[in-house]
Length: 366
Image (cartoon, rainbow, N blue to C red; front, side):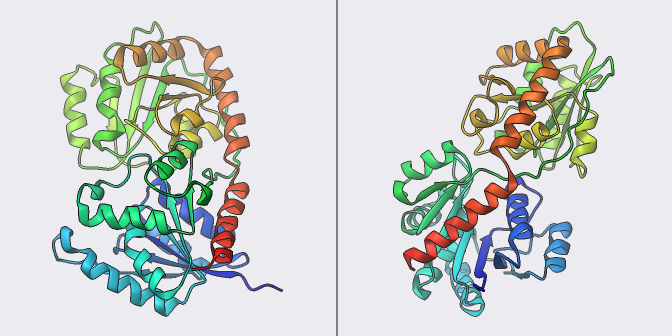
């Protein structure tokens, strides 16, 4: 019997974001039978549910304490810390999840002769890349990695444009478990759902601008939910735009099924997305989608699944108005969204593709 590969996954932190959930889903599906996982976080940020799941699985979590020194010189401390942790773990491969993690662990993997895989999950890169002290090692790690995985065709194209060798880049779509679909809501009021952390690039202000222009004959309301300091500003914008009677900005959602059971349409109007998990999760439950025509969102919303819209409030409002007023269209697109999500984002195919990337990296050497 072949012993499972020892894989050290490195990530900045294990918060509640979509990329973090994808990593946890991979570990839960593969550990310990198909790989032996260790998780290295470059901070002590860890969602309690993730921590408990790792404990139940018997996965070691190595959390490096935050450094008090200025961010610009933080790599001088974090790289040696990562080196020590990787040397003690002695993995067969290091799998860096996201940009800053790749820059931190790549020198150690190279020095120790351990193959490196880098997971790219964004078409925009990390904000840290504005500083050369991060940008140079991040790009170098991606160029030197034995395999780079991207979770959408848009991310794959961006990885190559950033310097990764095309023959080493692999498309590994996000993986989501099949769940029972939700029935269409029968309420007379149509409810739009918008799940995203409150950050400028996530498009909440664009959503509000579009909602001001919606001219539907059918009663409607909209609920936003997420975490982030911008929430207060969004609440103020709701009041200033005169939308307080039908739009809310709530905190994080803990039960996605309950949220989408109470909403008819999933909306996400980000500046750009690598592969928007929130839309895939809504599609799995049978909800039609509205998303901005950019990045990996195009791959999540084919014509049968929803409506791609430009970054322009009037066009967004027109699409929302039509979906609010046409229940048959919502039902048809909801069925199409679920069919596409089941076909493209099967969790087992995603796990198998990650394991294949790991094997390729090991076969290629350190």
